[in-house]
Image 1 (tube, rainbow, N blue to C red):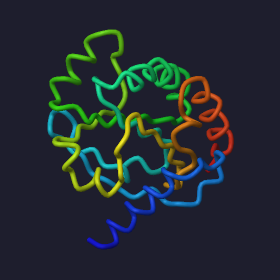
Image 2 (cartoon, helix red, strand yellow):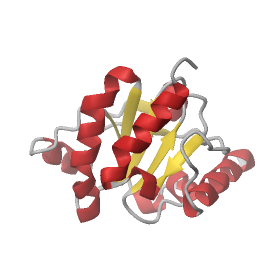
Image 3 (tube, rainbow, N blue to C red):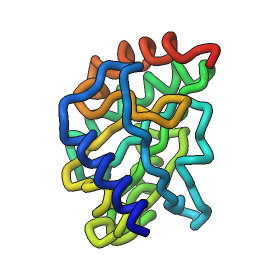
Length: 169
């Protein structure tokens, strides 16, 4: 258990420091296992071999909702090249996310839900204290970029650069 907590601390330090340039990440992303709205397991390690954007968000978070158009554009243009998006909702109930997805943003990518997010040990270990929180994990499981490099107009160029650097691996 101490190793998992230590890995969470390493991720938290990586998330709180200046973002690494795509392809220059050094820290391995710690595995986490969450559930989707239907209760089925969603595990980060099952996505090894893909470039993964992990986006921690909530329907009540204005900046999070503002990022949806950029995530949708990334999904639409890069999913066929191996990009996977995992949105982790910190809403009160899975029903909040289901209602949100019936509106403008269908979010046709992987979804996970954290019940009681503020008290969830994995979220505490990852130090997810602000939203949105976004990280890019390479095919090798290492953190390539975090937060600002993955927001707004910076998202697509960062992802394209990372994909070019990781194709063929």
